[in-house]
Image (tube, rainbow, N blue to C red; front, side, top):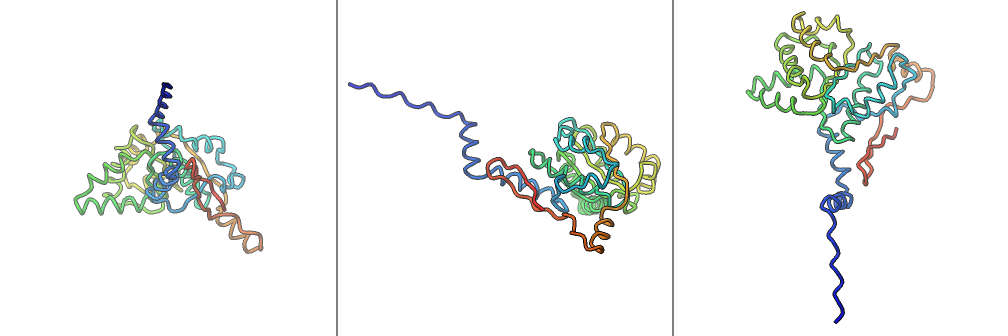
Length: 246
C-alpha cells in the first residue's frame, strides 16, 4: 500500500489575511476611507508643493515629518506664516501622509471646529464630541487667527488642546506669531496656558514670503502656464499607497 502524502501545512493566519486583503483590494479601501473620514478641504501632497517659492520653510524637517514618526512620539506641529504661503498645503500633505500610514486623522478650520463644539454643547453632546477628538491620532486645526473667537469658543478650543496634551498629535496653522495669539483667545492667561501645552513637544515650521496664490495670479496674467495646484489621489491596489497626479 502506498503511503499517503502528508497533508500540506496550512498557511499562517496573517499570510492568509494579507492574501485576502490583496485579493479584495482592502488596503486601497482602508486608505481611502481614512481620507474621507478626515474631511480634508482638499487632497494635497508634497509632490506639488513649491519649496523653492518658500525658502523660509525647513524642507528637511518638513519631509522628515511626512514619515509620521512625530505621531508615535505624540509631538505637535505648528506652521506659522502670512497668508498664502502654503500652510494649509503643508498640513494637508502631512495629514495625507498620516492616512497612508494608517493613522486616523481629523481636519478642521479653527472657526469650523469651534462652531461644531458650540453646537454640540447646545445639543448636550459635547462630551461625546470631545471624546472623539481626544481619541484621534492626528487633529489638524487650520487657520487659527483668521477669525477672533468668543470667550466661550476660546475656552472650548482650549479644552480640546488640553485633553490631547501628550495623548495625541495636533497640527495648528496660523497667520499670527505667538505673541499675537491673545487677539484670538482674548485672554493672556488662556493663551499662555494653551501655548504651554501646544509647544511642550513641538516642531515649528515657518512659512514667510510673498503669497504663493498672488504669484500664481501674476503668472496667469502674464500668460505663463498655471502652476499645478489641484491634485488627484490614486491608491495602489496592492499596497494602498497613495500617489498624487496633477
